[in-house]
Image (cartoon, rainbow, N blue to C red; front, top):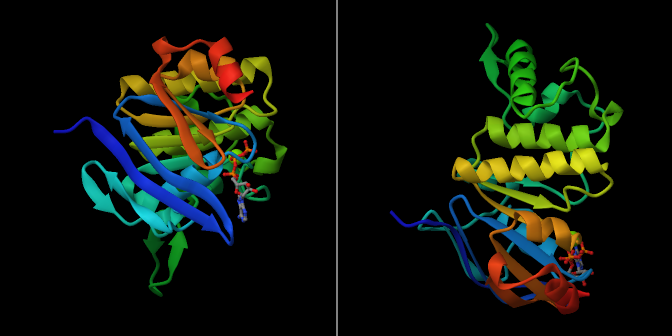
Length: 244
Ligand SMILES: Nc1ncnc2c1ncn2[C@@H]1O[C@H](COP(=O)(O)OP(=O)(O)OP(=O)(O)O)[C@@H](O)[C@H]1O
Ligand SMILES: [Mg+2]
């Protein structure tokens, strides 16, 4: 069995005339944390949006666990085991914690009329359990997400990925607007994923955070990959010079 979880080969993406990704290769092994860095507009979010099915690919190939895949939409990525926490939190603010945990995967039970209705009870119980498992203490599954703090929202998103036993977690600027304490918690979560074999991509402008938790650091500039190296081979100061 190969250690490879994800392998991207020569990915290209255009937004109209803008060549946003230029022949980008990326490999992630099971249990590996990739720190993805680069200036504003370098193409980081574009790259991960292709992997998680938000954007289509213009050309290139993606292999997941050794098989060539064509990820056409976010549901397909989720079904493969790729979970994403986006830069701009995409949770549904008006909906409850429970609904957000199960979004897109609601357990259904069939009534006499054969109409499927959401199995609310299961969602409530299971979402609270998932949240507890990531060390968050939220009082009720019914609270709308808009009433949570930034860190709590990230916690709900992480709980979702743990509950559905994702194989890969992508975090695009997950610590933006978080307190020091909340940030440490997110970094701890990502670290803990390594031991259970989940691979992750961690995008951040905070090079100290990236250097602390990444096994490998991938740098991008103007749509191209400009470096890919084990963390041990570089320092935060070198990364600042490279990107800053
Ligand atoms: N939906 C879109 N339509 C058109 N252009 C886009 C779109 N999304 C991104 N771009 C452009 O593509 C380039 C790469 O953007 P991207 O969001 O991938 O950068 P990024 O590395 O994530 O930057 P940041 O660190 O600011 O989040 C930028 O020039 C951006 O303006
Ligand atoms: Mg971005």
